View 1 (tube, rainbow, N blue to C red):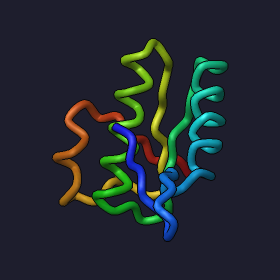
View 2 (cartoon, rainbow, N blue to C red):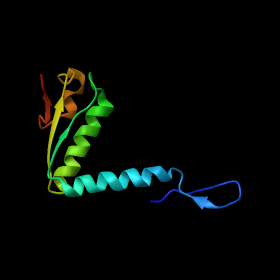
View 3 (cartoon, rainbow, N blue to C red):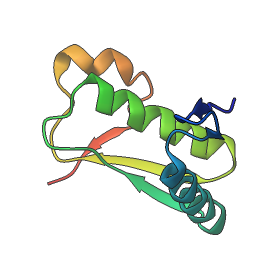
View 4 (cartoon, one colour):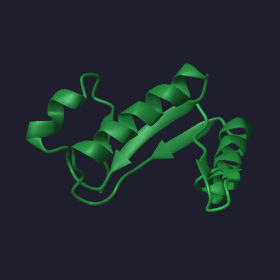
Length: 91
């Protein structure tokens, strides 16, 4: 799905053209590598844990290897997100 907006003179343009360049870079990194380590900020919240798990699942679906390493242990109230024990705490 492409989102377009109109400027003050009615010309269509993508809302964030710089993101297209960044997404091309990310796509090339994913295509050119096999093994990925995914991490988050200290004291991860549900959003960051969910994103890590989703990205790992996507990478594995396209034949890549993904390991999730976090600084902190997964909080008890978010353990339900990690049904396959993929979230690893490192020291």
